[in-house]
Amino acid sequence: MAKIKKRADGRYVMTTTANGKRKYFYGNTKAEAQGKCDAYQSQVKKAAHFDDTLLFRDWVDIWVSLKEKSVTANTMQSYMGIINRYILPALGAMRLVDINYIVLRNLIGGMGLSSRTVAYTHTLLKSILHQAVIDEILYRNPMDKVPRPKQCKTREMVTLTKEQVKEYLSVITNKELYAIFKLAFTSGLRRSELLGLRWQDINFKAGTLTVNQTAVKIDGHSEISPTTKTKSSRRTITLDAETISVLKTHKKVVDVRRFQTFGWINNDLVFPGRSGGPRNPDELTKVSREYARKIGVEGFSMHGTRHTHATLLIEAGINFKVIQMRLGHSSFKETMDTYSHVTPTMEMDVITKIQNIF
Image 1 (cartoon, rainbow, N blue to C red):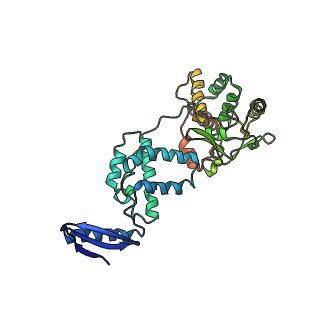
Image 2 (cartoon, one colour):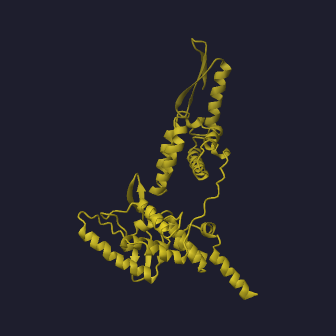
Image 3 (cartoon, rainbow, N blue to C red):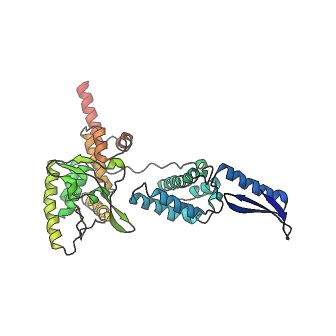
């Protein structure tokens, strides 16, 4: 039961107990103290575990401990980059209950960063605060009232033609890097999947490759992750005879380096780093651009090998469901949304078919 009394300084204090904690509400008048107490009790009724002492940064720690159980280490690192760089500096010291939609709207609206970064921050904040609603600490999510910023149209991914792929591979003099990019173009694997690939994942007799793990960069170090980007990323795909041959030759090169290297870390990796551990992903990103420039192509990236693979399959008339499976997309819609653009080759093919019809 709430009690109110007048203090020696003339102010009023109302005392009540909620969720096992004694709470004090002060005011210059009885009505002011009563109003603050009533407002608090209203919050408690709406949210069973309402806590007006919990700081936002402490709640983020709880959210992270819950979230890291369901996402990959690479994804978690991406989350923490946004949280530490943009969210905690602005909101960390505030009480969770004081964060309202005006505070959040001003944060999102005043970031002055790329639309993609702002949208990512919006998504993370909404998820963090949604968990507080689920746990009945807040009775509603203030991010629900903050509009998600529209993303500007991203620059179209640069892909290579069949002829350019051959030219690209011809400028690679390093045997191990040649094998990496040969497989990248013919399989469509993500960078992390290529670097996490093990020899036991390749069935030379069947001509298949299975994605079971990835290599990611965490806190500046390359590490093996036993997980894949999504559940559907764990897949088995077929390889062409030429790529299988390249990989067999590459295995001999790796075996020689393994026997010649003191302190070799045997992770069974197809594309190991200097001492057998996983390669630095940034190395591939850097050289992918360098090779592209050598053939006169600007704006190409390591991820462009994956887009090139998909685009060439589409041009060849391969069924989209097959492409979805090879790329490890979680849905057919994801594949369609990403690769539904029309290339010049596809347009010419349509013209040829129309001429044959009419």
